[in-house]
Image 1 (cartoon, one colour):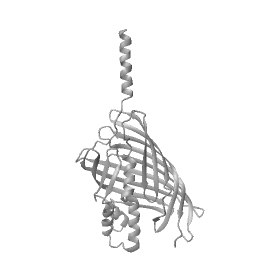
Image 2 (cartoon, one colour; image 1 turned 45 degrees about the vertical axis):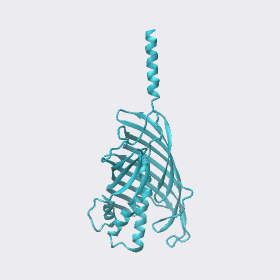
Image 3 (cartoon, one colour; image 1 turned 180 degrees about the vertical axis):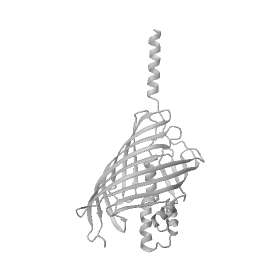
Length: 306
C-alpha cells in the first residue's frame, strides 16, 4: 500500500511538472546594454531579358541596445550601430562597403561610418515587439548633410535607399525578426503560438510565424519557428534606384532560437528564408514600357549576443 501511495504521489508531481506554464518575456535591467551581432548571406537570382543576373550579398552589423528606462509593460532603449558592412558579388564584379574602412574617397563606406554611434530610440514591449522607433530619419538626414559633395537627385536617391534599409519601419521589422518571438500568455514545453510581423524595406511583406517551445535547459529557452512570407497585396510601387518597382513574392522561413532564461534576450538565432516570385518595373525613361521578371532570394542569417 505504501508503495502504491508513493507511486501515486510521484505521478501527481510528474503531471504537475509537465503542465507547468512558463512566462517567456524580456526581463532586462535598466542601465544595462544588450547586443545583437548579425551576419546575413543572400543569394539573389534574376532573369532579365533572358539573361541571368545573379547577386551574392553579405550584410554584417553589430547593434547595441541600452535600457534607458523601464515600466511594467515597456522598455525604452537607446540604439546604436557599432559596425556595418556590405559585400556584393555582382555580374560586373565584387564591391564592398565597411564602416570601419578609413578611405575618404569611398563615399558609401564613409556614410556607413557616419551611421555608427549615432543614437536613436526604440520602445520594446516585454514580449519583444517594437512599439516605436524614433529619430532615425533625422539621424540619416544629418549624416548625409555631412557630405556636401552629394547633392540634388543623387542625394535624394541615396537617402531613399538608406531609409528603405535603415528607416524606422525597416528597423522595426528587422529587430522584431529576432526579438518578437514570445507569446502573450504563459506556455508549456511543446506549446505553439502564432505571431504576425510586417517587414518593410524595398518591399513590404507579411510574416506569419508559428513558434514552438521545443526545450527548456537550465540556462535557455529553445524555440523553433516555421513561417510563411507574402508581399503585401496592397503594396504599391516604391521608388528603388529612381524607378517605380513592385514585388510579388512569397515563400517560407525557418527559425531556431535560443533565448537567455534570465533576461529573455536572444543569445542565438539562426534563420533561413526562401522566397520567389516576380518584380514589376513601372514604365520610366530608364526602362521604357516597363518590364516584369522572375526573382528568387535565399537568405541565411545568424544573430548572436556577442
